[in-house]
Picture 1 (cartoon, rainbow, N blue to C red):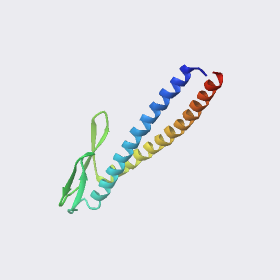
Picture 2 (cartoon, one colour):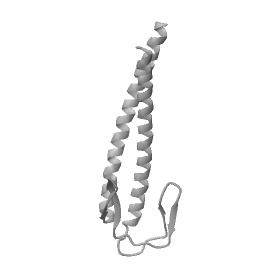
Picture 3 (cartoon, one colour):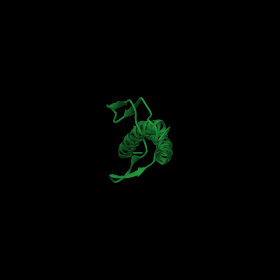
Length: 128
């Protein structure tokens, strides 16, 4: 193993770690969305509340009463679809499953790269 290979493995490890962190943020956002949709889908005809609606990482709204007959769901490419809370909840759960699968895959790859990196560093130390 050469120093170039070690540099490549370190770069790959950093990339995978960034991807893992990005997926964790997405997972957190999806879990918040699911929690909110569950509260909203309790009743589509009568007011529900009071409730706290997360708007972003830094802002949540305190709402005394709300009716949730339809929600807008980002489908990708800045395109939204209007659907009922139950259908939106199903969409979010499916996306959460995909994100969890991605997290498992990235986590496995991180572990493999870490082992390869440690082995490569050992080999370089022995060669010196």
